[in-house]
Length: 113
Image (cartoon, rainbow, N blue to C red):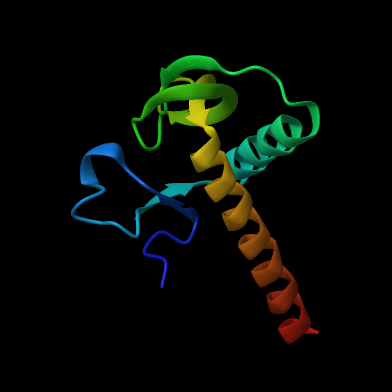
């Protein structure tokens, strides 16, 4: 059961926690941010853009990363768009979470009809 229903859970293999949690930990993204990250994943697989060296915002690995636009809630400004770097492994986790989330949405629609 997801403790935050507005967040979609993504499995992340955190650099500093890999020995304690070899199967990964859960991080959450809202649906808008999940869509944005999944689009980046699809573009990476389709166009094979070059990555740059950086630190992944989800797993903290220092590796090749790709920029993803996320929307961060801000009490004074509403929503702030921010580019964060995600590694390919986390983008793959985002894609898996996206597919799972869309499948759950379809199942919920079928239950209500």
